[in-house]
Image (cartoon, rainbow, N blue to C red; front, side):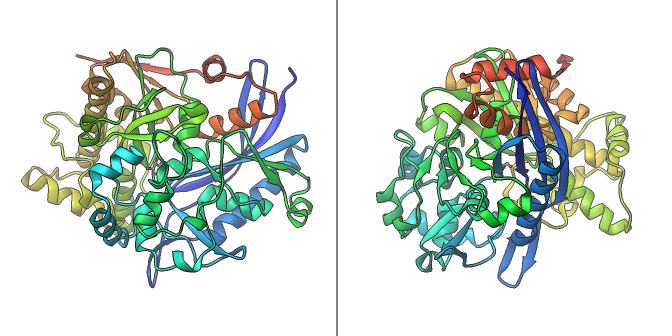
Length: 466
Ligand code: LRH
């Protein structure tokens, strides 16, 4: 098998990237082409994404990728989940809202008044998150004006190709897919007042969505297909977790820490519902049985607040090194407290939870954050193990958090399990693997794809210190 090249667009809540992925027999690597900032922007009617700028970065990145590597054969796009754009006659009606915008609270009340949460869970298997798309749709006055609703990666694919589809893994985060059949639950949509006509046809990862529109093919420099990948970033990340056994748990850690197991059958039980465990769809029909923990968001928002206060940048590795050296009792808070969800002065809100236990130095404060995240990770791993009836023998940490040595060691210690850290770019690798497989350049099964990750990427092992 010769080495082939693809372009991976990977959009996270704090930054986006375009990468060249190379894949073949014993080969899997990434070349960073461009990285650009992303984040909430405050508009008159609430928090949005600066979508036009984001899309322009994507097109510019793809152009540069093709310039550097003319043999690129396809494009795959993944991003954070749940957010969407509404279209009418192919035109975007408004800039997409950010999932941390407060308007979805009203959507929650209105949806639950029509369909109680217990019934919702039995239909869609999703943990309660106030920003799940169905609540956002309910709170969005514009759905009635739209003819199509597209989640962010599908929206970008549409702008690139003119073809409107809903990729399955990300569609599962809307709350409008039936957990047993993985089809749209039109009856549920009707009951909560979502026009069913806006829900596009579902496609599986690996499907060719369409070819670049001629004007874009000209600008980017090549006629290329856009291939659906696990377009939910977490789904792509889980593809590239080198899970070694059924006893391997995973944590995909970036802005969020998504903590759980891969299942072949859903486990929609009262206990899973009460423990806030979700069933997001994975690639190849697997289930991502996981719980959302607030991840590095707590740290990055605190650092952002301190930087604003100081008017100068903070050296994060230096802060973490000082945090590691903090001795004595570390006060913990609930990393998932709803008061920590919105952007803005994070240290003040964490201090409100810690009360008189609030550390008075920044390193000690940062240590509290990291240990509180690790405690929530360990707790979620234990809960996943109990709910699924599986003994866990190791925890894989992928994503940006895999580089945070303090966090990985604290997770190993608190879970009393070894942590295997890496790859840091699991999401982009999962994107490349699914494209590569669709092109016939990678093996067929998820297990073989993961074996390729294990063979090409070194993991760092953290032993629990008892
Ligand atoms: C991580 C993520 C997560 C979702 C959240 C909205 O980037 O996609 O899986 O719950 O963003």
